[in-house]
Image 1 (cartoon, helix red, strand yellow):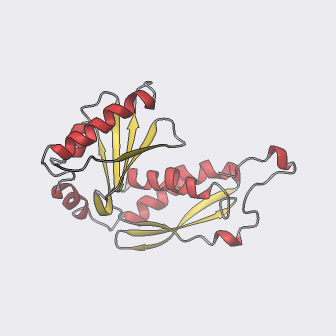
Image 2 (tube, rainbow, N blue to C red):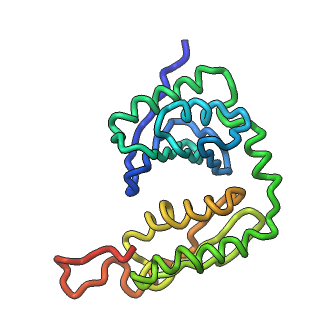
Length: 208
């Protein structure tokens, strides 16, 4: 008899998003995104999760499945159905992530990655960060791997890790799903104001 699958849920800052952590990685190196209605290439995990009403998109990275909903139903109600779908995918005997899904990412050309990411930063990310005096830039591209540097109010900010993970990284993977690793190479210890910027500490607000 196989051991029960342990799944731990974690709410994200975005209320439409919840992360489900497993004990073992589902995919190595790559981060895969599936949207309802898109080709899953026979990936049982995506197919079972999209059987749950209100699930719009999933991202699989390592041992974490990030699920995005498009329904007002709260996560405490949805989490049980999501957990059941994950367990059903394991029990199906089909590949959780089909090799074809990864091969499809590998087949995408890398020539335009830098231009795509720079355009994203210029048109979407940096205008949003500008209100906090921050910005991000593409420091280096090595094949399908990116190095990102944060500056201004984002350098050393207490919220920089969350900004990178839930904002910048998610946006990059939306426009360039074939990117593999995204690394923050910022020297956050050198930030001029590494935590909060406020004359009144009692009313301090995060920079990101």
